[in-house]
Image (cartoon, rainbow, N blue to C red):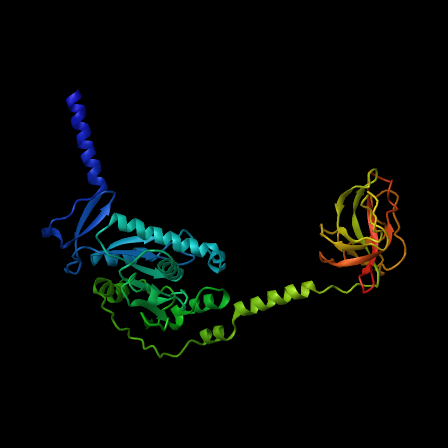
Length: 416
């Protein structure tokens, strides 16, 4: 039994080693494609009868709103031409993640760079190239710019990668030129460049940069993924760098919609609108009268301690203050918070008349709310300062808590 156990362990170790490191094919079968699947080798003759000495790995990278539906067609044609194909996915990339110019984009680039490193560990002696569509072009381009990875050849289609990328910096990391498949009738890259930051219209109008060959077609955003296109344009380029000229001239008339998109920079308009909204939000809103009532806070009837306070004293009328934190007439107060409807300005009575002067009237049963107050009014912005003219806490003692209402006006020169 001891001999059998040792023999079995030796065989198991040999088998595990074989799975971890696939055997090298002898020269007599190099005309066959080798595909490693969980440690096995599948041999298939090349469909066109040509040789692919040494092999070549091609990574497929999809764009947004997709799990790479086009992978199957491209993979089949590339594998028939002798390439080892590795589909790569970021998981599903929705519109929100695509549009936000924040951390997810860097995450995509980093994740792709790790994938390249892993592939090169699995296929240490094979060149690695990539075909990236739409948002995939951005992830690949940023990965090449920011991380220490290298690729053999790169094909972009419907690219949104920024045209400002330093392609000269990529020399030595990629075999230039990069091929970019473009289409003047593909308006999606132009829309992406127009509505958010970090992208470009390269997939529509081309990169127009040294180190990139812009090849124009008359295809939609996902019109590149058919067997004829893959075989005619991508296989020759991936195999030996041959760039097949397109039948569509670059000088074709620009699509009218693309012109319209370029004429109205939506992201700039959004930035201007947000800036104006912030500026306008800082302008004090006009009051219905010179003085108005506001709810200063909710206090305990026993201790006068605040349970909710919407103002703070910034310049007290009494320079030597008692120990309590009560607000007094002529104090200057600042709006500190707006808790729902309680903190807004009491700008009109329930009858519709402006709440300018006079004392508040209270019912006999409801807690700390005046009888004739309509809380649907103007909201005071946090940070606004007012002078306290009058204080009404007539509801104190009726219940466990009471509301303290302040009649205030805006601060003017000479106040404290």
